[in-house]
Amino acid sequence: MSDALSPDDLDDTFERFDHLALAVRDIRAVLPLLQLMGGVYRTGGRHPTAGFTWVQFMLPGDTKLELLTPADPSDGDHFLNRFLEGRGEGPHHVTFKVRDLRTAVAATRRAGYEVVGESYGGSWQEAFVHPATAHGLLIQLAQWDDGVAAPPRALEDVLESIAET
Image (cartoon, rainbow, N blue to C red):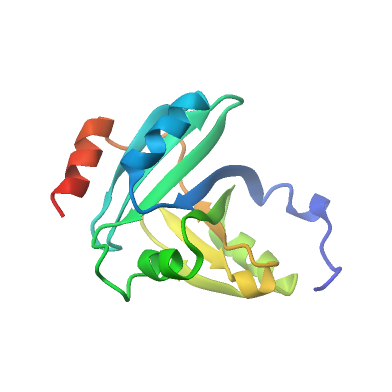
């Protein structure tokens, strides 16, 4: 990797570590563990075009943990089903909030990392650092406005949407 960038060069680009996302087969099965760890449901929903359901919890120390589960467990082509089949349940990606996604992607590429899955436009923009160049870790770089809250959905409603699949 290139040594052209120092952490000081990126202070204005990478705002913060935001969350760890776990791929799971059954969100409900993880809830007792999250409760034990002091997890408090934050938000969640179904991603209609990407075919998965997600929920986020706040953990003590202002840490977020996100759970992802495929909408259709029988779809062998879905990225989460492939992940679960190949690796089992566990860490899927980490997310860093960036101030400007294009700047973060350019800096990441200049540092020698492969960026894939770029999606610009709309209130949520994202790109991923390929795990083959990031020591096995899938890193999501995302840009969004913290001031725009997702519509509130009760955890029960999100879990019910999984059952409707």
